[in-house]
Amino acid sequence: MFSKLKIAKVETLRLKEFANLCWVKLTADDGTVGLGESFFGASAVEAYVHDWCAPLLLGRDPLAIPARMTELRDYIGWRGAGVETRALSAIDIALWDLKSKVHGVPLVEMLGGRARASIRTYNTCAGYRYVRSAEGQKVANWNTQGAEGPYEDLDAFLTRADELALSLKEQGIEAMKIWPFDPAAERSGGWDITPSELKTALAPFEKIRSAVGDDMDIMVEFHSLWSPPMARRLSRALKPYDTYWHEDPFRLENLSDLKEYGRHTDALICASETLPSIHAFREYLETGVAGVAMLDLGWCGGVSSARKVAGMAEAYGVPIAPHDCTGPVVYAASCHLSLHAPNALIQESVRAFYTGWHLEIAEAVPTPVNGRIDVADAPGHGIVLREGLESRDDAVLRVSK
Image (cartoon, rainbow, N blue to C red; front, top):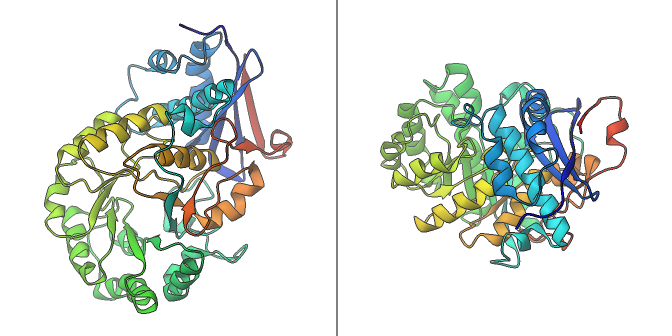
Protein backbone atom coordinates (compact mmCIF):
# COMPACT_ATOMS: atom_id res chain seq x y z
CA MET A 1 0.00 0.00 0.00
CA PHE A 2 1.33 3.43 -0.89
CA SER A 3 2.24 5.80 1.94
CA LYS A 4 0.73 9.22 2.50
CA LEU A 5 4.09 10.97 2.13
CA LYS A 6 4.68 13.18 -0.87
CA ILE A 7 7.84 14.64 -2.38
CA ALA A 8 7.63 18.37 -1.70
CA LYS A 9 10.98 19.62 -3.00
CA VAL A 10 13.74 18.56 -5.39
CA GLU A 11 17.13 20.26 -4.98
CA THR A 12 20.51 19.98 -6.63
CA LEU A 13 23.77 21.38 -5.31
CA ARG A 14 27.09 21.78 -7.09
CA LEU A 15 30.37 23.29 -5.91
CA LYS A 16 32.75 24.67 -8.51
CA GLU A 17 35.73 23.49 -6.46
CA PHE A 18 34.46 19.92 -6.89
CA ALA A 19 33.31 20.35 -10.45
CA ASN A 20 32.35 16.74 -11.16
CA LEU A 21 29.95 16.25 -8.26
CA CYS A 22 26.21 16.86 -8.25
CA TRP A 23 24.15 16.20 -5.13
CA VAL A 24 20.41 15.61 -5.30
CA LYS A 25 18.18 16.25 -2.30
CA LEU A 26 14.59 15.02 -2.13
CA THR A 27 12.49 16.45 0.69
CA ALA A 28 9.21 14.83 1.73
CA ASP A 29 6.30 16.87 3.05
CA ASP A 30 7.09 15.68 6.60
CA GLY A 31 10.59 17.21 6.30
CA THR A 32 12.55 13.99 5.78
CA VAL A 33 15.44 14.49 3.36
CA GLY A 34 17.09 11.91 1.11
CA LEU A 35 20.53 12.65 -0.33
CA GLY A 36 21.90 11.27 -3.59
CA GLU A 37 24.99 11.92 -5.66
CA SER A 38 26.49 11.45 -9.08
CA PHE A 39 29.85 12.19 -10.69
CA PHE A 40 30.91 13.69 -14.06
CA GLY A 41 28.85 16.09 -16.15
CA ALA A 42 27.44 17.72 -13.02
CA SER A 43 25.73 20.68 -14.69
CA ALA A 44 24.07 18.41 -17.25
CA VAL A 45 22.86 16.10 -14.46
CA GLU A 46 21.46 19.14 -12.66
CA ALA A 47 19.55 20.25 -15.76
CA TYR A 48 18.10 16.80 -16.37
CA VAL A 49 17.00 16.44 -12.74
CA HIS A 50 15.03 19.68 -12.84
CA ASP A 51 13.83 19.76 -16.45
CA TRP A 52 12.70 16.15 -16.71
CA CYS A 53 12.69 14.39 -13.36
CA ALA A 54 11.36 16.98 -10.90
CA PRO A 55 7.90 17.30 -12.54
CA LEU A 56 7.55 13.51 -12.32
CA LEU A 57 8.66 13.40 -8.68
CA LEU A 58 6.87 16.31 -7.02
CA GLY A 59 3.72 15.25 -5.22
CA ARG A 60 4.54 11.53 -5.54
CA ASP A 61 5.14 8.96 -2.82
CA PRO A 62 8.92 8.75 -2.13
CA LEU A 63 8.66 5.32 -0.48
CA ALA A 64 7.33 3.64 -3.62
CA ILE A 65 10.79 3.49 -5.18
CA PRO A 66 10.05 1.03 -8.01
CA ALA A 67 7.09 3.14 -9.12
CA ARG A 68 9.12 6.34 -9.05
CA MET A 69 12.03 4.90 -11.00
CA THR A 70 9.71 3.32 -13.59
CA GLU A 71 7.99 6.67 -14.19
CA LEU A 72 11.35 8.38 -14.68
CA ARG A 73 12.44 5.97 -17.40
CA ASP A 74 12.79 7.91 -20.65
CA TYR A 75 12.58 6.81 -24.29
CA ILE A 76 16.32 7.40 -24.71
CA GLY A 77 19.37 7.43 -22.45
CA TRP A 78 19.09 3.94 -21.02
CA ARG A 79 21.84 2.16 -22.95
CA GLY A 80 24.85 4.11 -21.63
CA ALA A 81 26.03 5.70 -18.39
CA GLY A 82 25.13 9.12 -19.77
CA VAL A 83 23.39 12.07 -18.18
CA GLU A 84 20.05 10.32 -17.84
CA THR A 85 21.48 7.28 -16.08
CA ARG A 86 23.67 9.35 -13.77
CA ALA A 87 20.76 11.59 -12.80
CA LEU A 88 18.45 8.64 -12.17
CA SER A 89 21.19 6.97 -10.12
CA ALA A 90 21.46 9.99 -7.84
CA ILE A 91 17.68 10.16 -7.45
CA ASP A 92 17.45 6.46 -6.65
CA ILE A 93 20.14 6.76 -3.97
CA ALA A 94 18.25 9.71 -2.48
CA LEU A 95 14.99 7.73 -2.44
CA TRP A 96 16.63 4.82 -0.60
CA ASP A 97 18.22 7.24 1.87
CA LEU A 98 14.86 8.91 2.48
CA LYS A 99 13.01 5.61 2.88
CA SER A 100 15.61 4.31 5.34
CA LYS A 101 15.28 7.49 7.40
CA VAL A 102 11.47 7.23 7.46
CA HIS A 103 11.84 3.71 8.87
CA GLY A 104 14.66 4.80 11.19
CA VAL A 105 17.16 2.18 10.03
CA PRO A 106 20.54 2.17 8.25
CA LEU A 107 20.48 1.49 4.52
CA VAL A 108 22.05 -1.94 5.05
CA GLU A 109 19.02 -2.93 7.15
CA MET A 110 16.61 -1.44 4.60
CA LEU A 111 18.24 -3.68 2.01
CA GLY A 112 17.46 -6.73 4.12
CA GLY A 113 20.23 -6.89 6.70
CA ARG A 114 23.89 -7.71 6.99
CA ALA A 115 25.77 -10.59 5.46
CA ARG A 116 28.88 -9.62 7.47
CA ALA A 117 30.02 -7.34 10.30
CA SER A 118 32.68 -5.59 8.16
CA ILE A 119 34.28 -5.93 4.78
CA ARG A 120 37.85 -5.91 3.53
CA THR A 121 38.96 -2.79 1.65
CA TYR A 122 41.57 -2.04 -0.97
CA ASN A 123 43.15 1.36 -1.37
CA THR A 124 42.82 3.01 -4.74
CA CYS A 125 46.07 4.91 -4.87
CA ALA A 126 44.73 8.31 -5.89
CA GLY A 127 45.87 11.63 -4.45
CA TYR A 128 44.04 14.47 -2.77
CA ARG A 129 43.16 16.29 -6.00
CA TYR A 130 42.79 13.32 -8.30
CA VAL A 131 40.21 14.07 -11.04
CA ARG A 132 39.20 17.16 -9.08
CA SER A 133 38.49 19.35 -12.14
CA ALA A 134 36.04 18.72 -14.97
CA GLU A 135 38.78 17.64 -17.38
CA GLY A 136 37.75 14.02 -16.99
CA GLN A 137 39.78 10.83 -16.53
CA LYS A 138 43.12 12.06 -17.90
CA VAL A 139 46.72 12.17 -16.77
CA ALA A 140 46.42 15.96 -16.83
CA ASN A 141 43.79 15.64 -14.10
CA TRP A 142 45.95 13.56 -11.74
CA ASN A 143 47.09 16.72 -9.92
CA THR A 144 49.92 15.10 -7.97
CA GLN A 145 51.72 18.35 -7.14
CA GLY A 146 51.35 20.16 -3.82
CA ALA A 147 50.41 17.26 -1.52
CA GLU A 148 47.87 18.25 1.14
CA GLY A 149 48.79 15.49 3.57
CA PRO A 150 50.62 12.19 3.97
CA TYR A 151 48.57 10.23 1.42
CA GLU A 152 49.53 11.55 -2.02
CA ASP A 153 49.29 7.93 -3.10
CA LEU A 154 49.24 8.51 -6.86
CA ASP A 155 52.65 10.15 -6.88
CA ALA A 156 53.76 7.45 -4.45
CA PHE A 157 52.85 4.51 -6.67
CA LEU A 158 54.64 6.17 -9.59
CA THR A 159 57.85 6.97 -7.72
CA ARG A 160 58.08 4.96 -4.48
CA ALA A 161 55.61 2.11 -4.67
CA ASP A 162 57.65 0.08 -2.17
CA GLU A 163 57.19 2.72 0.55
CA LEU A 164 53.52 3.02 -0.33
CA ALA A 165 52.94 -0.72 0.04
CA LEU A 166 54.63 -0.72 3.45
CA SER A 167 52.56 2.29 4.55
CA LEU A 168 49.32 0.53 3.59
CA LYS A 169 50.33 -2.67 5.36
CA GLU A 170 50.97 -0.69 8.54
CA GLN A 171 47.27 0.30 8.41
CA GLY A 172 46.17 -3.28 7.86
CA ILE A 173 45.35 -2.67 4.18
CA GLU A 174 46.66 -5.56 2.10
CA ALA A 175 45.26 -4.70 -1.33
CA MET A 176 45.99 -1.71 -3.57
CA LYS A 177 45.03 -0.51 -7.05
CA ILE A 178 47.39 1.33 -9.42
CA TRP A 179 47.36 2.49 -13.07
CA PRO A 180 50.94 3.10 -14.28
CA PHE A 181 50.12 2.25 -17.92
CA ASP A 182 47.92 5.32 -18.52
CA PRO A 183 50.63 7.74 -19.74
CA ALA A 184 51.72 5.35 -22.47
CA ALA A 185 48.11 4.74 -23.47
CA GLU A 186 47.43 8.47 -23.80
CA ARG A 187 50.55 8.98 -25.89
CA SER A 188 49.73 6.23 -28.36
CA GLY A 189 45.95 6.26 -28.21
CA GLY A 190 46.15 2.80 -26.69
CA TRP A 191 47.72 1.27 -29.80
CA ASP A 192 51.34 0.84 -28.69
CA ILE A 193 53.79 0.96 -25.81
CA THR A 194 57.55 1.37 -26.20
CA PRO A 195 60.07 -0.86 -24.37
CA SER A 196 61.02 2.12 -22.21
CA GLU A 197 57.39 2.90 -21.36
CA LEU A 198 56.73 -0.72 -20.51
CA LYS A 199 59.77 -0.85 -18.21
CA THR A 200 58.60 2.32 -16.44
CA ALA A 201 55.05 0.99 -16.05
CA LEU A 202 56.24 -2.33 -14.62
CA ALA A 203 58.62 -0.71 -12.10
CA PRO A 204 55.93 -0.15 -9.42
CA PHE A 205 55.04 -3.84 -9.48
CA GLU A 206 58.71 -4.75 -9.03
CA LYS A 207 58.98 -2.40 -6.07
CA ILE A 208 55.82 -3.64 -4.39
CA ARG A 209 56.84 -7.27 -4.64
CA SER A 210 60.36 -6.46 -3.43
CA ALA A 211 58.99 -4.61 -0.40
CA VAL A 212 56.16 -6.86 0.77
CA GLY A 213 56.45 -10.02 -1.32
CA ASP A 214 53.10 -11.73 -1.85
CA ASP A 215 51.52 -10.02 1.16
CA MET A 216 49.81 -7.40 -1.01
CA ASP A 217 47.09 -7.97 -3.62
CA ILE A 218 47.71 -5.66 -6.58
CA MET A 219 44.74 -4.60 -8.67
CA VAL A 220 45.59 -3.17 -12.10
CA GLU A 221 43.39 -0.39 -13.49
CA PHE A 222 43.61 0.15 -17.26
CA HIS A 223 40.80 2.76 -17.54
CA SER A 224 39.58 1.18 -20.80
CA LEU A 225 42.44 2.88 -22.65
CA TRP A 226 44.00 0.04 -24.65
CA SER A 227 43.24 -1.73 -27.89
CA PRO A 228 42.44 -5.42 -27.30
CA PRO A 229 45.72 -6.65 -28.86
CA MET A 230 47.86 -4.32 -26.73
CA ALA A 231 45.81 -5.13 -23.63
CA ARG A 232 46.60 -8.80 -24.17
CA ARG A 233 50.30 -7.99 -24.51
CA LEU A 234 50.26 -6.05 -21.22
CA SER A 235 48.45 -8.89 -19.47
CA ARG A 236 51.26 -11.25 -20.46
CA ALA A 237 53.90 -8.77 -19.25
CA LEU A 238 52.19 -8.65 -15.84
CA LYS A 239 52.16 -12.41 -15.25
CA PRO A 240 55.40 -12.49 -13.18
CA TYR A 241 53.82 -10.14 -10.62
CA ASP A 242 50.76 -12.30 -9.85
CA THR A 243 48.33 -9.38 -10.07
CA TYR A 244 44.94 -9.85 -8.41
CA TRP A 245 42.61 -8.44 -11.04
CA HIS A 246 42.77 -6.58 -14.35
CA GLU A 247 40.14 -3.87 -14.56
CA ASP A 248 38.68 -2.50 -17.80
CA PRO A 249 41.59 -3.28 -20.16
CA PHE A 250 39.68 -1.80 -23.13
CA ARG A 251 36.37 -0.13 -23.89
CA LEU A 252 33.59 -2.63 -23.50
CA GLU A 253 31.60 -1.89 -26.63
CA ASN A 254 31.90 -5.61 -27.34
CA LEU A 255 31.88 -7.50 -24.08
CA SER A 256 32.62 -10.74 -25.92
CA ASP A 257 36.18 -9.42 -26.54
CA LEU A 258 36.87 -10.33 -22.91
CA LYS A 259 36.79 -14.02 -23.83
CA GLU A 260 39.99 -13.72 -25.84
CA TYR A 261 41.56 -11.48 -23.19
CA GLY A 262 40.89 -14.15 -20.59
CA ARG A 263 43.14 -16.58 -22.46
CA HIS A 264 46.15 -14.32 -21.82
CA THR A 265 45.91 -13.69 -18.08
CA ASP A 266 45.63 -15.65 -14.85
CA ALA A 267 44.32 -12.55 -13.04
CA LEU A 268 40.63 -12.07 -12.39
CA ILE A 269 38.89 -9.99 -15.04
CA CYS A 270 37.10 -7.07 -13.38
CA ALA A 271 34.37 -5.08 -15.19
CA SER A 272 32.99 -2.54 -14.98
CA GLU A 273 32.12 0.70 -13.28
CA THR A 274 31.20 1.94 -16.77
CA LEU A 275 28.43 -0.63 -17.32
CA PRO A 276 25.13 1.24 -16.96
CA SER A 277 22.44 -1.35 -16.24
CA ILE A 278 21.50 -4.86 -15.24
CA HIS A 279 21.27 -5.73 -18.94
CA ALA A 280 24.90 -4.75 -19.58
CA PHE A 281 26.01 -6.77 -16.57
CA ARG A 282 24.03 -9.75 -17.86
CA GLU A 283 26.04 -9.59 -21.09
CA TYR A 284 29.25 -9.42 -19.05
CA LEU A 285 28.34 -12.40 -16.91
CA GLU A 286 27.33 -14.39 -19.99
CA THR A 287 30.88 -14.14 -21.39
CA GLY A 288 31.87 -16.87 -18.96
CA VAL A 289 35.12 -15.09 -18.01
CA ALA A 290 33.73 -12.58 -15.52
CA GLY A 291 35.90 -12.63 -12.42
CA VAL A 292 34.51 -9.64 -10.54
CA ALA A 293 31.44 -7.52 -11.24
CA MET A 294 32.42 -3.95 -10.44
CA LEU A 295 29.47 -1.57 -10.29
CA ASP A 296 29.18 2.12 -9.48
CA LEU A 297 26.01 3.13 -7.67
CA GLY A 298 26.23 6.61 -9.18
CA TRP A 299 26.41 5.31 -12.76
CA CYS A 300 24.48 2.02 -12.93
CA GLY A 301 21.04 3.14 -11.76
CA GLY A 302 21.55 3.59 -8.05
CA VAL A 303 20.87 1.21 -5.18
CA SER A 304 17.92 -0.42 -6.94
CA SER A 305 19.98 -1.49 -9.93
CA ALA A 306 23.07 -2.36 -7.89
CA ARG A 307 21.24 -4.84 -5.69
CA LYS A 308 19.82 -6.52 -8.80
CA VAL A 309 23.31 -6.76 -10.31
CA ALA A 310 24.58 -8.27 -7.07
CA GLY A 311 21.84 -10.90 -7.06
CA MET A 312 22.34 -11.74 -10.73
CA ALA A 313 26.11 -12.01 -10.26
CA GLU A 314 25.57 -14.31 -7.27
CA ALA A 315 23.51 -16.63 -9.50
CA TYR A 316 26.52 -16.83 -11.84
CA GLY A 317 28.89 -17.46 -8.93
CA VAL A 318 30.63 -14.12 -9.46
CA PRO A 319 31.50 -11.68 -6.64
CA ILE A 320 30.82 -7.95 -6.71
CA ALA A 321 33.17 -5.12 -5.76
CA PRO A 322 31.42 -1.72 -5.61
CA HIS A 323 33.41 1.08 -7.21
CA ASP A 324 34.28 4.27 -5.44
CA CYS A 325 36.70 6.94 -6.46
CA THR A 326 34.15 9.75 -6.49
CA GLY A 327 32.14 11.40 -3.72
CA PRO A 328 31.24 10.54 -0.12
CA VAL A 329 27.60 9.63 -0.73
CA VAL A 330 28.25 6.93 -3.34
CA TYR A 331 31.14 5.69 -1.20
CA ALA A 332 28.95 5.32 1.90
CA ALA A 333 26.01 3.77 0.02
CA SER A 334 28.46 1.31 -1.56
CA CYS A 335 29.74 0.31 1.88
CA HIS A 336 26.16 -0.49 2.95
CA LEU A 337 25.64 -2.62 -0.16
CA SER A 338 28.94 -4.43 0.46
CA LEU A 339 27.89 -5.28 4.01
CA HIS A 340 24.55 -6.60 2.74
CA ALA A 341 25.37 -8.55 -0.44
CA PRO A 342 26.50 -12.13 0.33
CA ASN A 343 28.79 -12.12 -2.73
CA ALA A 344 30.54 -8.81 -1.98
CA LEU A 345 34.27 -9.48 -2.29
CA ILE A 346 35.93 -6.23 -1.28
CA GLN A 347 35.08 -2.53 -1.00
CA GLU A 348 37.11 0.17 -2.71
CA SER A 349 38.23 3.18 -0.69
CA VAL A 350 40.65 6.06 -1.16
CA ARG A 351 42.50 7.17 1.95
CA ALA A 352 43.37 10.53 0.37
CA PHE A 353 39.61 11.09 0.06
CA TYR A 354 38.16 9.76 3.33
CA THR A 355 40.87 11.54 5.35
CA GLY A 356 40.90 14.54 3.00
CA TRP A 357 38.34 16.39 0.92
CA HIS A 358 35.40 14.12 1.78
CA LEU A 359 35.62 15.52 5.30
CA GLU A 360 35.54 19.09 4.00
CA ILE A 361 32.06 18.59 2.61
CA ALA A 362 30.48 15.75 4.58
CA GLU A 363 30.15 14.21 8.01
CA ALA A 364 30.22 10.55 9.10
CA VAL A 365 32.36 9.30 6.20
CA PRO A 366 33.17 5.58 6.70
CA THR A 367 36.82 5.06 7.65
CA PRO A 368 38.58 1.69 7.43
CA VAL A 369 39.98 0.21 10.63
CA ASN A 370 42.77 -2.36 10.26
CA GLY A 371 41.92 -2.82 6.61
CA ARG A 372 38.17 -3.31 7.05
CA ILE A 373 35.10 -1.08 6.72
CA ASP A 374 31.93 -0.87 8.79
CA VAL A 375 29.14 1.71 8.80
CA ALA A 376 27.45 3.63 11.58
CA ASP A 377 23.97 2.80 12.88
CA ALA A 378 22.55 6.13 11.69
CA PRO A 379 19.44 5.96 9.48
CA GLY A 380 20.01 6.01 5.73
CA HIS A 381 23.45 5.85 4.20
CA GLY A 382 24.69 8.09 7.01
CA ILE A 383 26.26 10.91 4.98
CA VAL A 384 25.24 14.45 5.89
CA LEU A 385 26.58 17.39 3.92
CA ARG A 386 28.18 20.00 6.14
CA GLU A 387 26.17 23.07 6.98
CA GLY A 388 26.79 26.16 4.92
CA LEU A 389 27.76 24.49 1.64
CA GLU A 390 24.85 26.22 -0.12
CA SER A 391 26.22 29.59 1.01
CA ARG A 392 29.70 29.12 -0.43
CA ASP A 393 30.73 31.53 -3.16
CA ASP A 394 31.18 28.63 -5.58
CA ALA A 395 27.84 26.95 -4.79
CA VAL A 396 25.17 26.44 -7.44
CA LEU A 397 21.85 25.60 -5.79
CA ARG A 398 18.70 24.90 -7.81
CA VAL A 399 15.29 24.12 -6.34
CA SER A 400 12.08 22.71 -7.85
CA LYS A 401 8.90 22.59 -5.79
